[in-house]
Every structure is written in structure tokens, then in C-alpha cells.
Length: 565
Image (tube, rainbow, N blue to C red; front, side, top):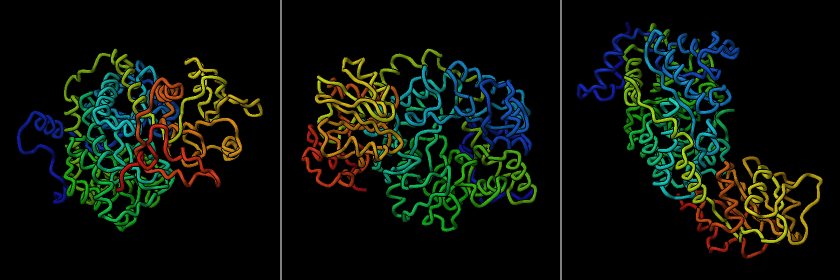
């Protein structure tokens, strides 16, 4: 056996012989090296049922059923996705969770699984209705109430716990200082570090109150990038002092809140580590900053190791070893699980990694499982909490509190027809009709608005087509246009010539319904955009309507902007 690694971090809670420590020691004592390595691995499995074969499991893992995947690698965890057919209705998810835990109990390690999911709310919601679907983090940032954030994530946690899920890979702790960020956007609470930190702490406390663990992501901060780490390796150019001022505060708040997991980012951060390696593989970042400077002693997890941002330099097995050398505890979704497991085992056998180093990570993972009630019979909330009436009412409350008017009067005329264009046009038009307003979704080549009508131009996650913008926002138009942004607020810059503009931050049903309540004059919007937007860059020459900077409520885009960093 290699000598003890002097840099191996101590296990949590070693100062007292607590029940958790005794359980961790007992379990660790019966796990051989290969089973310990299995505990470091969280993987995706394909299928809606634990014991039903799926050819995708065969192609990726060499065995047919999710239960067999768990047994083959002695996995410590499984992560759920809709694209892997894990996230149907709540009854199916609950049965899958129970089946996977049965498989884990029968596997050689005889240890329960950490069952995780990205139920961030809003744009990243894996389990939809009849579970409660909430607007996203930026909607909560616009609402401006950490107390509302805590209540939201408590509801999310209760529903996930009722489905047997143990960890929500949320909240996003990134400070979205680049409003055009393609991967974070509305997943962030906003652009002000202090305010984001408040919401991050509230979200973690809410998830814990709901009965699941929380994972703050993406360390050391993914908010100032214009590159998606799913497809390439982004580079963040903040200096060290900028990182401490902008990116670090939400993660420091997460640590103070007792977050269970910090998830890494696949991005290069030259001021923090000049090697050019992604943060996921960086010991100066994960050990030097996260462990030593911020004092985090919980589980460090990678983001998916199948993403291009982490696979630019090394093969899959080497990625796994380097991540552990950097300070990672949990290896998420290795693209080649067999290669990752074998490489870690070989690294221990050759002395590159020590058994003490592996055991330090296993201790953290076991301690997290103990804290989630997995050492015994975990008590789950009653299934009736899933989609409960009070949760649905809470989602409406969030959506209403988030809607923001940037300028103009967004209330549609009481006469004439509202012509709705863009993504979700059909759904928004239907909601307007339900509210008693004549409305129709405009069709390409069809008839257009007449005198007395109005246009509602919807902008979602994708940019509005320039041809459509030129036609609808022609300065010579005679039909009033209300722009409604349901995706990244940065879309508002290209829509600045609309007569009025609303931000909903989400295309969820509850967010669309909240927008309709404003469009029909039922509610007055109170949200404040948690980003800095310069609408002047999107105006056409000659657009000099004074109402384009000060809205009917006297709130300009400058007043709605987040403070200077």
C-alpha cells in the first residue's frame, strides 16, 4: 500500500465520536478499495424503471438495466435526467428511486445511493407537472425577497424528497455579470454579488428544510463567460481581487449555510491557476481557494465529465485521476465509466494516489449520506406534497413578484385584438383569451393587425429573427407593440423600440400567466431586473420617444439595474 498522503484532507467531524462518525467508520472499515472507488462515482442510467433493459445502458455501460449499472460499478450515486427517461411523472420517479435503492442494497457495497437531479427551477426543471414548476432563479432575483426564495426551495425540496431524491444540484451561485452568458443566464439570481449571496443562502436553507441536500455551482464562478462549457472551454479573465469581490461571495455564503456539495466549473481561470487546466482539475482552485480560503469541508463534485469543457486535454481516465488530485470527491458522469474507475484504481496501485486520499473523499460522501437520513430508513414526505395547492400558489406568487416593466405602459387596449408573435405565442394568446381579451397568435403570411389592434412580441431564449424585428418595430408603424421577454433579459436590448417592455424571466406556465395579469391590468408589476441592461444600444436611429427610458411607474432601466460591482 502507498504511504499515507500528507495532503489528504481530514474527514469531517473527527473531533467527537458522534453517531455519524461511528457509522462512517463502520462502513468504511468494510469497504475494500474497489468499493471505495465506486462510492466516488455518480453516473447516468437510462430508463424509467430500475429493472427494465435499455439498449443505451448496453452501449454506454455494457449492462442492460439501471440496476445492473449500479451493481457493475458499485456506484455511490445516480443522477436523473429527462433525456435518459428517468423523469416522467412523480409516481414513476418515486418507483425508480425505490428500485435503484433496492439494487444498491443488494450490490456488494450494500450502501444507499445519493440520487441527485438538476431541479434548479425555471429553465432547468427536470421533473415537470404534476410536480410544481416554479419560475427560475432570476425571477426570484427580480422579486428581491430571500424569504420568498427560501420558501420556494423548501417546496422544491419537499417534492423531491417525496420522490426519493436526496440531492438537488442547485442553487446556481454564479454572478451573471455577462448578460449575454449562453449557459447561465436566467439560471443565476442576478449580477450583484451581495444579493446573489443572499438568495444562495436562502435557497440552501430552503432545500435543507425540505429534506434534501444542496449543491452550489459552478465554482469558482461561471457568470462572466460568453462560451458554453458544454461545447468548449471558457476562459474567465477576472483578476484574483475581482474573483474575491465578484465571484466568491455567493460561494462563501453557501459554505456558511452548510451547503452539502460544491460543484466545479469546466472553465479556465488564469488568474487563479495559470496552467490553463479547467477548474475541475485545478488543485490551486479547488484546494487552495475552496478548501483553504473559503473553508469548505463538504463534498466537492465535478460537473458532468462528459462535457467538452473538461475533455480538451486529457482522456477520460486521466481526467478522473487529475480531478481527485485537485481535491474532488465525487466524479459525475464520466464519459467512460469503466476507464475512469480503472484509472483511479491503477493510480492507487502505482502510488500516484494513496488509499488515505480515497478514504478522505469516501468519508465526506458517507457523512453526506448520513446527514440525508440514508444510514437507516429515510422518512419521506407524503406524496400529497407533490404539486400541492400551497406550492402551486407559491409558484404564482413568485411569478407575480418577478414581472418587471422596463418602460412604457404594458396594459393592452381594451378594444381590438392582441396579435401575439414569437415563441409561446399560442400559449400566451390562449391565456389572454381566457382573461377575456380578444387575442390570436399571428401566422406567417396571414392577416395582420388592424387599426385599434396591438402586437405582443414574445422573445424567448433564442434571438428574435431580424426580419420579424424590422417588420414589427418599424418606426412608421401605427400599431402599439408590447415586447415580452421570457428568456434572457439581454433580449430586451434588441427590442428597445417597442412601446412597452415586460420581463417575465421564464416561459413556464405560471410565468406566462403572471405576464397576462400585467398585460390585462389585473396586476401592477413590482419586479426589478437584477442585471445591468443598456437599452440605448438597441434603439434605431430616430427613436426619441421619452417614454423609452422612464416607464409609467417612473422606474427607468437605470433604476432597475443592479448596482455597480
